[in-house]
Length: 326
Image (cartoon, rainbow, N blue to C red):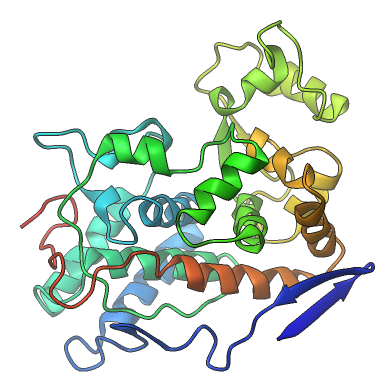
């Protein structure tokens, strides 16, 4: 156990030697070393070649991984197209995701190298990590051996993906259902240091917070005024997007937490992190620490998240095409 002490606030961080272990159930580091030894290199090199030319893609790829793991576990069910029933990718939280073609191109390369071996679930997990590393963010261990799910349900996505309008209690419940705790909520929310949000995900805070055409009193008035004037000019705007971490939305750093303390979190779910004393203490610690502290705890929670309800062994399948069941 290691304690991080910053500004009088203690966060307890668990370091289990081998870091949340290099072997978890049927997942293990280097799962493809014999069956497809070039797999992780192919993925990494593709990401490193293309993400520098499209750095804004790192955030949606990370978000795609997050949304996938919260519904049926990390099984790439998010990548499936709708068939007889509407799939996860057609749910409102996933409508603004980008990067599906990016994943498909990597899958195509791997199918040429070693057909039917590398799962789409592992590709998505590795790509999310490698994309963040490529833009200067933290790295984390990604044990492999996940298998792909065969079911994708729009309704489950609506139910299970944490929503931007959730309060603290709802967030804790949502994360708790996936085996994640308060620390994970605070640390994983730091992913909002990169990327954008669309006005319709938070404009109610600006124009109609309680149904009386009022403004959320928890948002910094200056920040709200600027959003209204330059970005989300009406409640009906559903196309304009806003940087989630203004000024550094392409940089993976701890500025997100500094903005939270200034009451400049974009979503209700961001602002919720300072409505609970323990969560606020965690936010304060990260805001007043170096980026390396943030990177360390973010990696810990990512290693925990990427093992949620994984399918291994004979479960699921290895898809030939990520958007289609075999």
